[in-house]
Length: 239
Image (cartoon, rainbow, N blue to C red; front, side, top):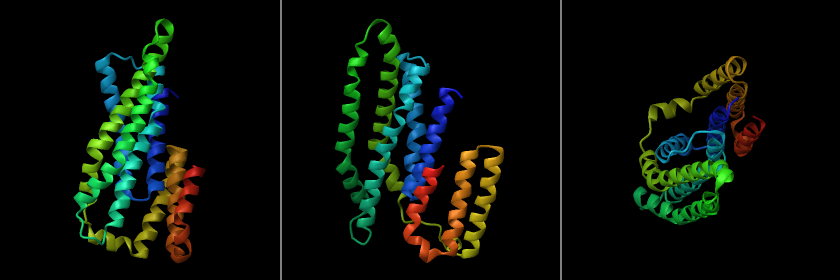
């Protein structure tokens, strides 16, 4: 496959790991949304700065994905922790999210700034070395700046919108019924097997194992509940 395919697979795998490890759907979706948006912003900046989309340039984006994910995880995990700690207090969600964001924002800014500054010598390279390594420095800087802007400027706002107390009670009550959970996880097993055989083996295997895990957790809820996170971690590592 090409490097473009590798970047797409890397993003998909990162999203799957985020959803399983964070184990909070709204937060996982927010973190996962950071990746494609930041990559898109990187390509837009490449267009305006005249950076060609060659292998070296795309490698800069590929090696930045891990750091981009870290920024979203740090911000959203801190917000989620503060919301859980202040659940029974009188403090409003807006105040809680603001405090959680300002608590980690300086550290995030410092970490990204250090990485960007460390690439400044690469921008000064001349001749063949400059033509070879400058695109990587540009694209990695673009990706980190885009992730930083999204994390600090938009993540707290989106976290406030997505962390509301409004829930679909009918769906929640429906999911608590064992019959519905058996059906949902059974469909995941069948769908995962179909995807593994006909489309993408590792994605199908992941869905298949998650479905089996859901069935086991439904059948042996009390025994498996303390080890739920460990099971999900094991499935992620296996896939």
